[in-house]
Length: 192
Image (cartoon, rainbow, N blue to C red):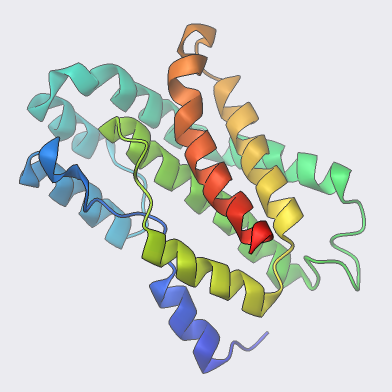
């Protein structure tokens, strides 16, 4: 499936994360670690998480949560994908929102990326980890590609459920807002 030049440009601009509001709570060195990981579209490594907790020992618990989610991302995405496929059984068939198979693969990659971005918020203890501008371009991209938004929002809710069940129940109240923030932002795409 060949992408138009306009779509390629939207992909470049559709960056979910921004650390621009974190200067008041994080040292530049910490923001640089997050930014590097985001630029590389990678989860924070063990070494990066250790550096972050060395700078802010109070964040150790949340860094451990981010690490656990990173280490289980494949299972979490698989579970969210299964939920979507159960709810939207024809979505992979001709005429379905995730047909042909390349579209479905892009969707599952987005699930992986959504959890990556959420783990940045968790590790940084900031629910305001999204970029309004980047999300605007993502919305335009999804509109251009006719991404099935109901399935994507449900998938993100599935990522939340699958993630939380892998974590201590006592932490669910503290962790839910990191997921809910991105779910709400993606849900706004359906309302515009």
